[in-house]
Length: 283
Image (cartoon, rainbow, N blue to C red):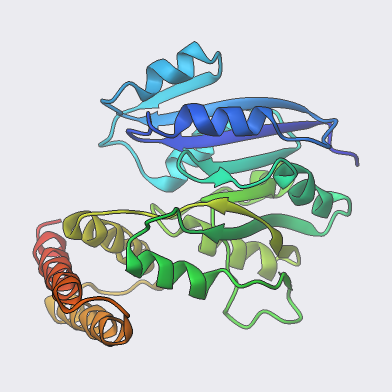
């Protein structure tokens, strides 16, 4: 079936610096005849992000910060749209080119593809750890995950993805975080395909404080606990914290920068490990 409509679902929280720019880039996408709609799901922004959405005339859904989790926000936004394909974006994940949507949608011409995600490149001046992480996760070559080649290594990212509505209707997002990987793994097991499209990319990276970085890791590990039916203990948390600190130390040693800069990076890593243990134990 041809794609006749695309629903953009954009998640925001204090994204006033990015949302207008993202909407401009989405408006400028070329080579697509399908009609489009934009749905912004905002989770309690205090910087004027909802006002930008209202001024631009998009469909705005507001939820409280306390009510947010990734799956709830996405499912709510998708329910409000009617596109055959849903293009999911974080507000600070901005397509690098005007053919991003056309290339992503080209994979839905057949019926077997459930979702497509693209390459990500760090914003200029991104934190060194983000540059390393993104370089490892998003390679220069495209690939496809299906039941014939996926052996527990299915990858996906809802920072910038497109999914087929009919597949989502059968398999909505489920986990409070890391919902993208769980969803992709499930639909591949159901016989669908996931495509990693490296020809197009979005700018996307996080410049976080050590405590913010720890919070994001905590959310991911909570989701993993649910998915794996894993008991959360202080020993497990401490072991994960130590493992992350050790990986950071190896990267910092190899990082080409001045000694004061590397010492600062080491201190940031120590703080992140501290907040990971402290805040995990209080949730």
